[in-house]
Amino acid sequence: MSDFGMSGDDLEQMYQEVILEAARDPHGKEHFAPDAAVEGSAAGTGDTVIRASHEYCTPGESHQFNPTCGDEATVHVEVSDAEPHTIARLVWDGHGCSISQASLSVMVDLVQGRTVDEAMDLFRDFHELMESRGHGLDDEAKEDKLGDAVVFQGVSKYPMRIKCALLGWEGMRDSVAKALAAK
Image (cartoon, rainbow, N blue to C red; front, side, top):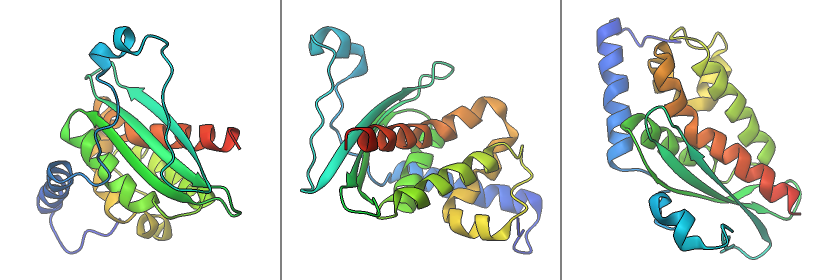
């Protein structure tokens, strides 16, 4: 990964600022999921109600929970019925640390409006970044595609924080799979 002519400490500080800003002003966050603490008793049937706001789209929804730190997110996606399938709408609801919230926000910016194939490529590239243990990707084209998500390279140094960064991405992948299975 390019260091932009900055020292390691300066680069780490820049990454932290980007993550904190994305967590403060999260993109794609809406309040639609029931409170997880009440969900089991209040929902009664345990069924999830999925609403599609786009005609000619199939919705999918996935709830993700990280028991290590308590982060949780419900990711709702609407996939176009037309080929190639595109992600017409991607929103989420949840709470957690700044890493999980920022990762969800950055993911929305990267994935919404893309084809399902492009979204799954980004999912794999982000996973590869998280597996790099702080070394980043050797492929500059992948880094370019990931855009702001490359700031999570620093997070990949800390195994306990990787799950936080991946929470929303796993929810997006599962939601898309559910939407495609419903077609």
